[in-house]
Image (cartoon, rainbow, N blue to C red; front, top):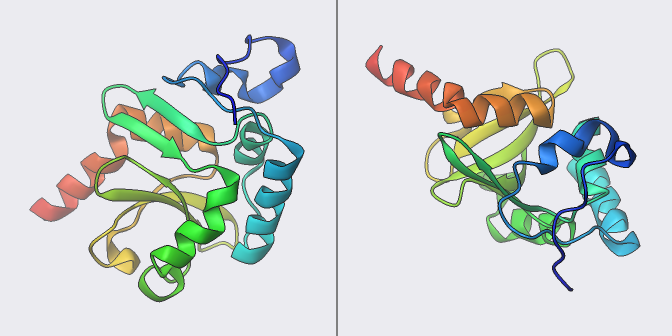
Length: 163
């Protein structure tokens, strides 16, 4: 697959155009195949993926965003979602979570069903108890990126460890 510079930020990219400004590497444009793989992953997860995540992934096939001051957010390519969840034995070690990326360090970005039946983004350590250690980050990718980038998600973990 050929890497191309980020697409111009024009109205054609609709509500996700501003999210692309945060991408720090060249992106791989989504293809019909990657869109089909994303649909397969959504079906397999049993969750309804948030609309802005689907919209972004229908344009780009994953990528690496720089979110100041907290660092990188990596969204895995659609074709890697099912295999990555199988490789880490997510159903066994991360019950209720469907992993979609990471921070390039020791934490994964995942989707889970929220208490009211909706879906939310969470940040969870790769080593720990996802039932107690997964931190909610928002119902949309935009909310998650804002909270992750501001450090608000990790501040909750630091505050909880002092209690």
